[in-house]
Image (cartoon, rainbow, N blue to C red; front, side, top):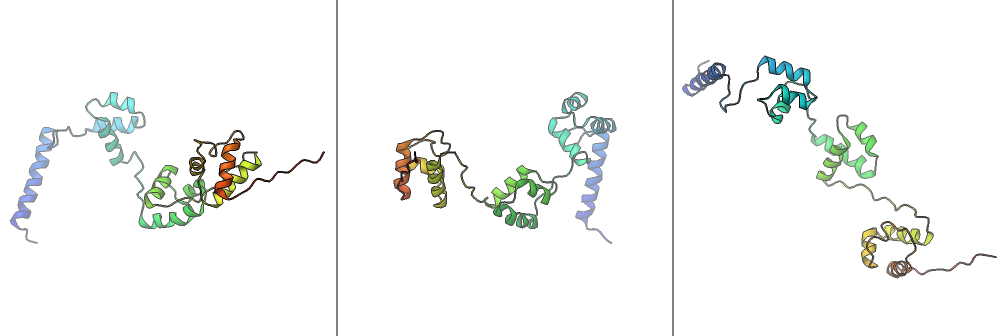
Length: 193
């Protein structure tokens, strides 16, 4: 196979660069080349970052973590493929627990799953509001949930800051406004003596 002049110059240039790096002990950017002693210290001390910075004074924290990744001390990053993202959609949108999703996608953390779902625009199903122990408040919250009104929106409609988000007492003014807004009427039931 015959090489062109440009290819020959490229090969000669590579040899020249490698020879310069071996001669000076520094890369073209001026950073020192990793020595065998430094690599051995990295292998022995890797998880302990304080010990590594003390043992490798001429290396930055970024250089240490990058070298640890390139020599295989750190597990490789698992990049989401299009197939993985497509497989994530159905269970995520139907409300499968995140613990089960981490089992379905080994090597992925909860944060990675949430981040990918958010980036893809997947939404979890809405959860019904929890019971407060106050039947009137619970019925208003359930009706608002059925009408797809969030508790924060309901609070703004009835001019309260966070009453329906986390009710702790009976606010009759807020309850009356919410009943009017949601199209309900209160019914009084008397206890039998």
